[in-house]
Length: 363
Image (cartoon, rainbow, N blue to C red; front, side, top):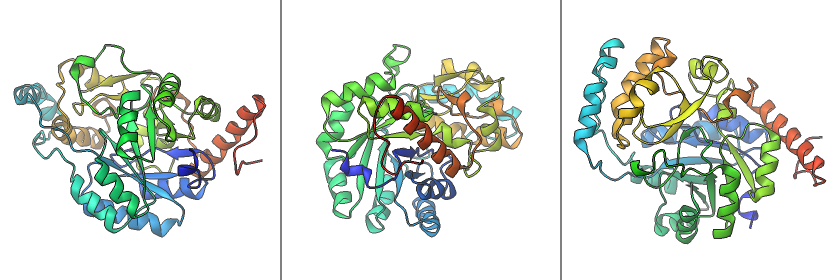
């Protein structure tokens, strides 16, 4: 079961693909060189920019790495709600001296063109978020030697991914920072407590599928990786933990906010993108979250300029500060040092349980 992935890394540590710039070639290459599995994120990039990042990464390492794609989204069902939200944000645009983006800038994130690039220039791993590809797509990637991972947030989604032919699932608990990778964007589920914690979700998914599980959601320490492996995962995916590394391409204000006492908690919000995403609670989220419709990527396009203007102005209160629930545990370490530290912590936790060290463990 686990052999479908374990030859890709020395340690069961996957650096999460974080769209928006954090998952840059330098970070992914450093993680892979250190023995983990680094990832790039194609979200919000052109196919050409995605390909350039792949070339840059290959110039930095010969180790395996992954690329993440966003699945195309269905049309927005309520354009009037999007327009009303735009009117609400007019004051923000005036404050930051910018304009709102066009909400109809596209809903497929150039999915077909990016797939074509990855079929012509295969990478070791491709993962998918916001839905499950067709069997034809997964089979085509398999034929060129690419292993596939589908992000899931429920046992039913995991079963769908297995039926479609995915090599593995990335099981994302509600603790995770950034966007929830659920297949649907149903506002009826908001506030209903349907999000499952990671350990419970891993256990449930194991009852439904036989393919390997990568665990994601709030993981910041090696002891948490050990818990995820004990629950049935073959590796752990960490985003927030790597976001603060010097190699990360995240904005400096975003990195600083992770441990700033001013930002004490996280919430799931649609305020910035129209899809549930976990971030540090700031002014923008408090003022606008109650009015944000379920409209992704329309709201993402609309607020993109606002977020960039806030960052340029040095104002984290107007930025999307994506972060997992464990953000206060972030450590400002070089990425290679963080991988090594996590590996040492993992083996210490396994030893405390009377288990053997992981393959390639640091002594």
